[in-house]
Amino acid sequence: MDSKKFSASRRHHLQTLASAGAALCLPGLALGQGAWPNKPVRIVVPFAPGGTTDILARVIAPELSKAFGQSFVVENRAGAGGNIGAEVVAKSPGDGYTLLMGTVGTHGINKSLYDKLPYEPQKDFAPITLVAGVPNVMVMSARRAQSLGITSVAEFVKYAKAHPGRLNMASSGNGTSIHLAGELFKSRTGVFMTHIPYRGSGPALTDLLAGAVDVMFDNLPSAMPHIQSGGLRAFAVTSAVRSAALPDVPTVAEAGNLPGFEASSWFGLLAPAGTPPEVVNRIQQETAKALNQPAVKERLLAQGAIPSGNTPAEFARLIDAETTKWAAVVKASGARVD
Image 1 (cartoon, rainbow, N blue to C red):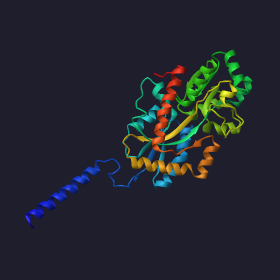
Image 2: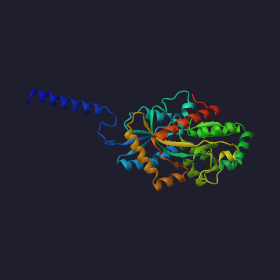
Image 3: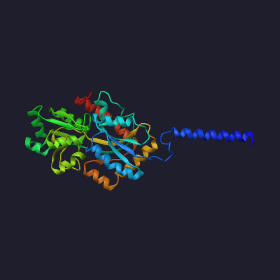
């Protein structure tokens, strides 16, 4: 072979090898374009089973499994107001195989509530899509409410003020929207209730139904089955307007004569920072399709959740706005967690 042709051939071969090596270093390209996912994907829920975060993750997971032909597995990692599960995802590789069902707590409230977080909500994650927004609902065990003679928000406030320190308030954990809704209620009404945090709505609801705790400002989807069965009495929803799922239940603002009271929750999918945009976009698109299916949409609406499926950019803007909003609420309430 001519020496010049040999040199050109050798250079071409080396360039091909170099290009292949560079491709292997890029997230999402190690297995070739379009190869993701080629193994199960986990969706970390930073709360215990049974709460709204868990419910929504288990609605979405099977739909994504069908769409991508791989299992999307829900993994509960509860504790510290959602911070333990969020940290797990923040420190995972950005390869598309670990996702977080984040909440207004993990990505809107906790940054202001906790002295130190093990993750940075706006820097350590790639927002994918808002799954749903939900109001919280002020609930008490029906038996407990009857025994105390409480049938409304006004009667609850009257009883609490007449018996300072006697009532307690359950939540799904420090810093969650359930906790902050209760703190906002306390600050606006002037009542005192001892806060009892749990590792998720599921265990908190169990004790609430048993009468071990008095009241809870739970997310509507997880409380709804117990409201419908008669186990829980709903006094008011915390949204600015009444919920279509509970049209006869007033808002806290109207029932408690508290103008401007509003403390809704939201839940959305996020990936670790550095996850390839093409993976993020594919998950967003399939999640939006799933949320738009009549059966899925009707199921969520019946539980009081309003499905979304917005774009990553829109979800990122929501997180920025909610971080600012809840910083003001936390400051006004005086709530703080070391």
